[in-house]
Each structure stands twice: as C-alpha cells, then as structure tokens.
Image (tube, rainbow, N blue to C red; front, side, top):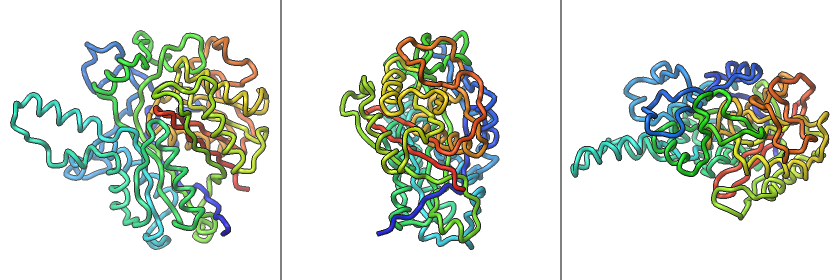
Length: 416
C-alpha cells in the first residue's frame, strides 16, 4: 500500500505570550517571557508563587455563557485554538467529507481545576454529596476531543492520548498515521492544559521540580543555564490541522509544511527522571530521521524539550550530541519553554507550531535567560542564546518527553 503524504494546513495557538498564532510568534521572536506572579489563587503558603498564565482570556468572547460553564478551562482553550486552526485551514463543510475528518486531542491532566473545585466544595460542605452534574464531563481528559468534533460535525477518528508532557506530540503522531494509512482525510490534532491551580503547583513543588525564583519570575525558566533551578508551570493550547496532501491540493488549501517523520519510544528507566544518557530520546530522534529519510545534517532547527531542570536538560543534550554530533553552524537548537514555561500535555503542540513558523519565517526563536552555559553541556551545541536568528530553515524537529519515560518527536519539512 502506498502511504499518503501528510501536511499542515491550519494552526491555532493560545499561549502565555500570545493568544493567537501571530501573537505567539511575535512573542517568541521578541524573546518575551510569559512568567509572572500567579493571579489565579492565593500563593501565600506556596514556595513557588509564579507561573506562565494565559493573559486576558475571556471564554465569553468565544463561547455562549451557558455552554462555557459546562466546560473546564482546558476544554475552553481547546475549542478556541481549534476554531482558529479550522478557520485558518478553510476546513468548511462544503469542502470536506465530515465522516473523514477526525479529532485527536491531548491533555496530560484534563480538568484539574474542576476536580479540585468539586472536591474542595464537598469537603467544606460536610457529608451531603452535592456535586455539579457536569463534574465528570468537565474533568475527563477526552472531553475536549469530543467537544471539538461536536462543534464541527467531524465524525472521523476521535480520541485523546495521554502520555504526560509528550501527550500533544503523540496526538500529532497518531493523526499522521491515520491519515497516511488512508483512514482519514484531515484531523484536528493538538493539546490543551489549564493546571495553574493549588494542587498542581503544590504537587510539583513537593517534588522539587519547580523554580523558586520568586524575586524575578521572568528569568526563572533558563534551560541549559548553570543557574537553573526547576521548570516554570505554563498553560494554554495549540491546534494543527493535518491533512492528506492531495486532498489539501484539490481544495486549494495553503500548506505550511509537511509532517515527514515521527518517533515514539520509552526510557524504561524511572517514573520522573529521564534516562541519564538520553537513551530513549536518542532512539526516538534516530527513528524520526529514518522514517523521514533525513540525514542529521539536513535538520536546520531542533526545538528541544529542555524544561530547565537539572537532569532533564543534560540527558537531552547528550542525546543530541550522539545523534547530530557537534555542528553549531548548521543545527540551531532552542528551548522555547524559556518563554512559555512548560505547558505539560500541550507543550508538544505549541512547540510544533513554533517549528512550523520557523520554516515559514526562516527564523529561529531564541533560548532566553541564557547567561552561563552549564559546563556539562557541550559548547558544540548552538543553543541560540537570547536573540532570534534569521537563516534558511527547511527542516525542523521537535522533542517532547513525559513522566513515565515517554518520548515523542516529530519532524516537519518545507513543501516547495
């Protein structure tokens, strides 16, 4: 069977540094940090008092009030970015077979705020179990994929992969495989997360995973820097419309890039720590190159997972060296989490969008807050410090890794 080609025809983004694709890209190129003191709850008792929150988001600008109150914020985010992507792709009913369009939507956690809210209300209200009738549907991690399909009548494949911080990239990989096997003509894929809550900040803080740079939040996310002290929690969403190449051409869709290679592996090592030599990451990057038919020297830009944690950044750097060698002029690397924070299950989606936009604009976003390279990170790795770089960009890769040892990586190529 001849496998189909898969291209990107639409994108949507809602991030801590911009509420549309255009605003997000402008924030990346400007090197803008989305970190600031938390506004969503009282942080008095918490060691970490800041996060990368979405700013100026009003669901009632996009959703009916009655409809919005039935959804957790992660689902609201999902619907907003899906709408931007579907409109961008021109995926109208008269141009597609709705039975052949699917939705694969990821969230690492789902409706954490709704879960917290209901449990706290129950605990404070005594033994009378007065739960919101929408509690379960607001909380479960698959609801966003269902809501997107209902919004547009997309009756194709529909589910929600969950693999912690690799979730959204797994959604892209699954969508890629369904389309190239001929099981769908287009799929809305991506991820959303809304977990700037007491339980999330408290939980990650107890693991000593979060930065505690409360005196200067904007500089707290500093991947590969010698002075990093943990990741910065983020929230938001991104959507990509993936489409079979000939189907996109037939309806005259604009094509941003082609998804050419994927890799998914396991570290099989530890619940939270990455393999110290980056074994799983290396296997996944190697598989991406094999499937895409690419040589390491053909990759122009690598958007790394790099969360600003001590072990994770180093293991990923080792894996990159093993796969790509040291070619600082050819391969630019950047960690956009230095600006957006870590969006957990949505990270792979917003970072895929960043990579595709790098192709569109021939520009590499920077790694900000980079002041002193960790001496264990090879100087042969070009980390694009602090300032965006203009250069021809034809091929990009995007790395994501999740608790449980999940590794998911994708590669995009310019379509000439």
